[in-house]
Image (cartoon, rainbow, N blue to C red):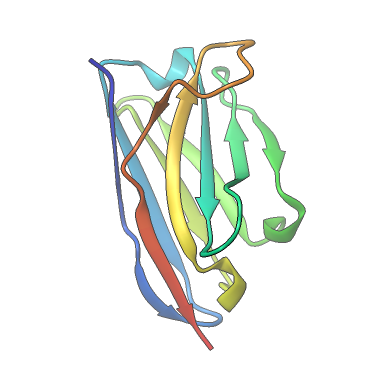
Length: 119
């Protein structure tokens, strides 16, 4: 059974930084596409950043370019989302998710971690 467990969320002031982690069991991240997605109150969930099975970043949503970085530690089977220069509009529940190569939809999701940025 695949499980994804996020951690690292919290409350931070605008301009601050947070690093989210997502640890997997039952699936090896280096063989799958992994994404960070977020959902703000009253808004649809959006894909924020995606890393391919090869380790290449294949997508950043425009609003986080230059501020967020995704990385992967194969030895720990964990992905990270380093978030710098946080803005109040980054407030959301952040989820990591994984999908098979070439698949359009994610098939496993974590439980989410709340990120709140105060102004």
